[in-house]
Image (cartoon, rainbow, N blue to C red; front, side, top):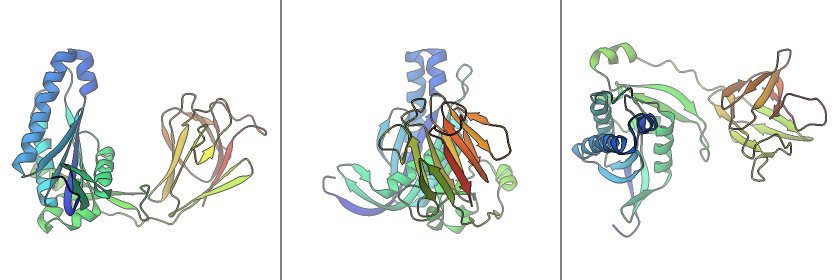
Length: 297
């Protein structure tokens, strides 16, 4: 297919997890053989549900389907097939699956558009043995299939004006589904805001501006000139009714809430609450450094 064609399809990403340990324990040749065999199982499940494999990128497969129902059925079969594989040494392979149904562009046997981005984000949210999709996709599914899923979160996603509601598809047997399903009780997101102050400048995060990056890199939302900071030091993003700071640095982010001892995050996440301050790569030294004060409303 050479010309761009708009259409409505389901896009899926399925990513094999555990491969790094497999390579470490079994060596390159044997690990590659096992991973390829696992990917063959994914492809077979996709084709069985009348899907099309778009591309394979390392340990990940991207596929498309004409309907949300076909994507969900393929996702469940993928999990069942991989769950049935024996452990390899001390490693049990698992798959993270995400899919979204919406408008896309088909061109040169590839798929482009916002639907692809949302499907990739759902796969990124999923853990091993999980299937994640969006609330919009759930509306395109038959009522019977919607009973085998539960809403778990609403995430702020870059480029999206409103939060994206995330659902988990429950693919285990009936006993597990009975235990896990039911009408989800999900509180409506509270309108919240976070005010940051740095170098006499104020920054406000809310529903319209839901995330910001901080670091020495000039492209950061807040540029930090402290030499102890990393180029990409940390990120703050809104998740439903809270703001979370995710450290991505070498030296860590030091955070203190008013009246509480200072703590250090290293490649970790922490919810920002009340009032406080954080510094980059070292404990707070008071006035004169590149610290950021915050207030959660």
